[in-house]
Image (tube, rainbow, N blue to C red; front, side):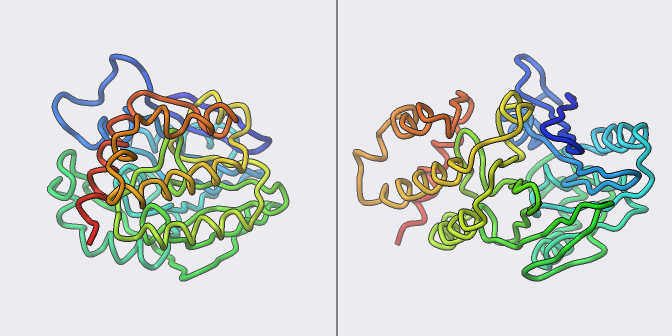
Amino acid sequence: MRVLRPADGIVAFYDGRVEGYRFAEGLNWVDDGALGLGIASYAIVDGDEAVVYDTHVTVEHARFVRRTLEARGVTRFVVVLSHKHLDHVAGTEAFADCEVVATTRTAEALADRKDAIEAGTLAGPPGIAPLVLPTRTFEDHMTLDVGRRRLELIHVDIHSDDAAVLWLPAERLLFAGDTLEDTVTYVSEPEGLDRHLAGLDALAALDPDRILPNHGDPAVIAAGGYPKGLIDATRDYLHKLRRMPDEPDLRATPLTELIAADVAAGRLTYYPPYEEVHRENVAAVTTSAP
């Protein structure tokens, strides 16, 4: 685990993108969906208060997050879950005595799948037991105060229909969860591409100065995050995916070529393990096409 400090009072807890390192042998969602690509959770800290944005891939990771923040003098925690996927909620047991905030959709999805998640049958092993559920939910928008900082939680339909991004308007800093990702977004709901594109328009309207995604390059995160062009790069990629069912040549275009302009402009970095993500995306949009 690497502790990064992209801005004053902002802490990123990053793990993954370590050659030769695996959480466990065999297929498992911790390695194949998270650590292999690199993943961060975040804390926004002011005085003795902190908002923790996602609880990481294991309870041990989350305990490390909590210990690190407590060593800084934090005594009050509020957890915000960005969405329902396991690599973002797995460590919540370490914050079971705290308020846990999520969209209503996230809370419903986790409650509906609780038995399978705990048994390790939803997405394969490992199971998350016990799965700690949200204690407070919101529909579209919610504000939180952490010390002197005001945070806004916004429900958007990008990557998954339950996503919550965290927006610091005073700093114009956007915590994007999995709504934005570098090298490319993972299309978990291919039937929702039009909704996702509308959600990206809503993020662009915020006009952020910097963006901190959960999956991205640790060097970029440590340096303060991504430019708002990450939104444009993601929109461009989704538009190309939407065309692929009808354009075989586009389906066959290498990922490096598809994103070349965005890499050259500094909106994206190329990380080779995303080749598999792209292959899965192409298969998903092609199979789901009417």
